[in-house]
Length: 107
Length: 155
Image 1 (cartoon, rainbow over the protein chains, first blue to last red):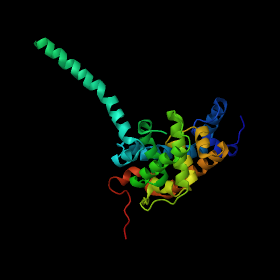
Image 2 (image 1 turned 30 degrees about the vertical axis):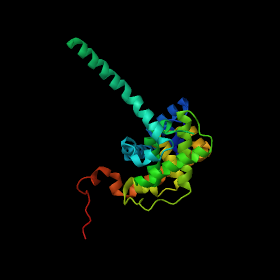
Image 3 (image 1 turned 90 degrees about the vertical axis):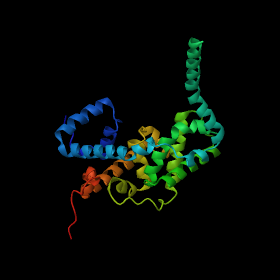
Image 4 (image 1 turned 90 degrees about the horizontal axis):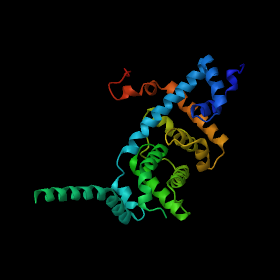
């Protein structure tokens, strides 16, 4: 294979990084990258950016959504109630069933 | 109209996208999320979760492109600063692909651009940040910032 590294555009390298090239092209690019450290370095730097970016904003998606936002949602009152009932019902139903069995054993 | 039940599971991701678009301050990001929700209510909002999410991400990107960064968005250094210094259209492309895990087709569609334009923005965003990474020693060692400074400025 005689592809010159300059034939690899930044755009194609991006598509490679993001898994958006065909399998055949992926195989070609993988070989090419092995032989061209400059391209490989660029790719590594982009990979590092990726993980930093993900890490930088991961916490925001894990923190609880603030009440101020929840309360401002359309129909929030009705749906919050439905949402809570959906989650809590199975637990309390189980608890009741358990308590009842316990009582039955005692009496 | 999407009600709160349909929106709940989407909120954490929407807040993350809004924060990345605006820099980290929470209040303006949450305000943007709310405005995006109100905006799609005027159109016919999609029923299923995946399309609803796309519509909201698109609305967020659109809103962020129409206004200046909030006052609070002034990270002094590092990756977040480099991200905020990108043109907003580039920032949206990069964050959709990198952080929100959109495919090229999805991201291009929701930004209303072609796949080629999307890739072009992505590539230049990555190169712009890479140049900053090389120039900024603190950025190449982000872990150092949490503890003692690695290099101290001696006057």
